[in-house]
Image (cartoon, rainbow, N blue to C red):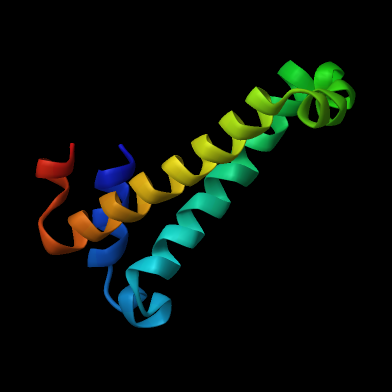
Length: 93
């Protein structure tokens, strides 16, 4: 889904000039995805949010996994966005 939407976005006339590069497109789609999912996260997990800083500080496995998953997610999405720019959305799907 994301690959098709990114391909449609970059084929829109004028948008690639305004976004300038794939990195900006990636940043925009990631920011929008985060903002859209925040209300859902707060509704479902908001009661546990206060416990998270203590768990993060006391458990090195949690802190490592959080950082590693964030970096892996960023790297995968950056690569996927660059791949779509060089090919089309169909091979990426």
